[in-house]
Image (tube, rainbow, N blue to C red; front, side, top):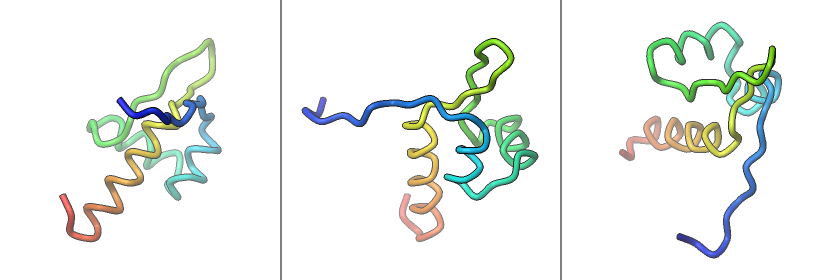
Length: 68
């Protein structure tokens, strides 16, 4: 475990869309096929842990550049 860990924030859909560049429809399509982090339901809200979104973005960049 590292001595420095980024705090995890819960993101609402507009922030997820901004971080990923994906539309609402595409996010939910990717969730349905297991290719995007699933949301956490909190009351009527859907929230995503920021660390999971950041990891997904980093993995997507790595794959697009040929790293695995």
